[in-house]
Image (cartoon, rainbow, N blue to C red; front, side, top):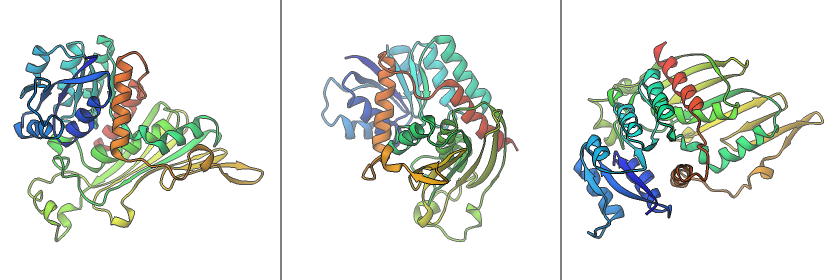
Length: 345
């Protein structure tokens, strides 16, 4: 059977990012599913276990029961952020490696508790910043790390969403830990930190605002969340690092469809790189030289299903001793600290 996986949190992300990709690995299997909502587990069975066979995972509605009853090697935590730290710590204490969805936690102390437990248990623990597994992000990181722009100096991380993510209660702060910053822009924050070389954080400040309730009309799916929507949807921030590097952050929901994109721009002492549109430029002989095709052919494709497959397979390989986690504890701490400090201003 290989690696025995328990998936805790079987909503859309838990099913499609975790269950699906564990089953496609070849050296891992899902032995248990847990969700307080029975319909989410039934949907997982419908999608990935259509036949009622003995190979179906065991089912739990309390993660503590799963951890007590099942001898799992890996817990994949797809819950909302409100209980993610407790689930992660409990799984680590039971000796399981943990792959957890983002945002990591509500607060930096909760994130530190997760990291400290992973260190004490000597287990792999990684937050799923799966944008690192995009083909364009991988190529951009290789370009920067290889000296293609000299020393990276400044990054702009921006996330403009056309709507509100309603496939989960990301718009309810008590469950999600935050809106356009924690639930969405954290992906590009992580990329910017990675592209800058993961420098030590010095300070972060910013402003969070909400305009959802100022809008006079909504499409049907947003009308349904009007009464419970209580998080931010317009964020700006500035981050400085001890190295002298810096970055800005933008996180917007309800953006015009024409700007419904996410990106990171990086400026260096001898070049420039952009994730959206994808461009890699080196300064040479008094002008920029376009090196984009050298690092990634223009016909590349990438989507969310590809990057979550790469992420899950990578983490299983780490647990098999075949790889080292792409996201480090220090980087996870920095990402959470940036979000935490912007919210606290």
